[in-house]
Image (tube, rainbow, N blue to C red; front, side, top):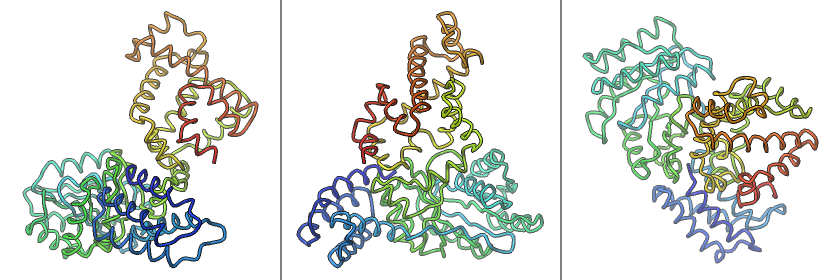
Length: 464
């Protein structure tokens, strides 16, 4: 997400970074470019006008800090205004209520409400350590009820057995009684949507709100709908006392306009952002971190939190000690590291949060990279434990057997073993020389990595 906006803003802000002082003349063209970048990113016109007006007022009224150049000061102002536009700070989910705390999800059909219900349920269960019951009241689309049951089985979260022949109000009342009876902490209600805003849908969701008195009324919106997201958000905000927004399918939108528009239009914070199809991929929305991503500064805090949550600390420490001692890096080690990377959302999920990662993502085909990693995993799994520990014993006959087992060609086996051989040498150098510098020098010996590192992406980042 934000790739196009990030690239355009970074290119635009470079023009002013070397200026000696901020004047109305030298920011006029830059502001025009910023305005164009925001409009191309599908940010609502009213939000763009407000944004550029405030940036201009602050820039011209700012005394430049002694530690910053005027150009850097202007970039800081743009960053701070992005943060303010998206909501200043993360707004926590409110479930501090006498059980059950009710969360009502509303939005158009196809926005991702049902998947978001399961993602939110898993977030509450795993991170907030509370019991959850999910319930679909979408009687117009029985498949939605079944979909929630399937997601419930996948996440281990109970789902209420909704009867499609009952009315949404009857189902919601029964689910609320069931949650009270079993002392469930949180009840998530997945409401019905339509292809467009209509009176019948709004009337129904209003009645559900009145019956359930939810602690959270969340508007679920598809980031890929762009400008329409703002219009739909306004309709729901006018009809319901919204408390927050869940922005879905954000990984599929390179523009990011919805994230900058929805908060301003609804007056309510974006509380969560869905960055993938996997059920666990729901991030709390931190405006300051998202602003940093947009301006190419990365999001190291979220990356560290994900590492702490998703990776095995003991395994990581064991691996680090092994490399430090100069022990042999095996294919089993390589497989383990690939699986850890997958937990982080693959190559794209990792690069997106690194400083300079947005530029590197534009150069690297991450989907092809993730596909290749899947092939490598299949090849390693087709080997015997002895072969994984001693790849030098893999000769012609073994290669044919492994290729057949992994469903790849012998040529791919050879390529993978050659690249792994170079990686082994790199790991030995890290152990001998120590630190990141030894690793970076060794990585430059690998042709595929050399191109990535000596370009404007990671290489530029490392030189800074």
